[in-house]
Image (cartoon, rainbow, N blue to C red; front, side, top):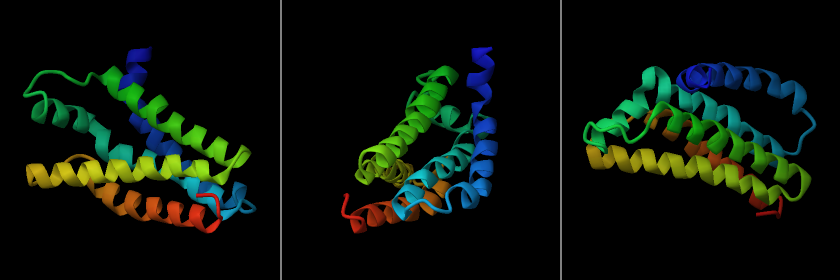
Length: 157
């Protein structure tokens, strides 16, 4: 069962990301901008992961280009990196921002920006597209910047 989940997590994540975005105006209507910005990092990342991992694109790309055909990243590694490693980190960032200090939202914001930079550097180095580049640039750069600016304006960053 875990292998099936590891092989198909991205599809549930994409649908959950769309659902979270559709429900955000209802459950986040009274949130401060800092928490809203931090929260939006999660569904943005879930949509990005669909571009990146649908049809196992990123793992195949990574193993082909960086592993020279050897399997460096397994489906289970991709699952662990993305579900607890990304969703979990963003969730903890949001919880800490809500419970302790909005500045903890910077964890989520910088995670997005770091990912976008890695995609852009990889595209420049390989002189071409890599899975996740489009949403990394279109979603992560503006949302990460907005999140940082909102946290700084709140006096917490």
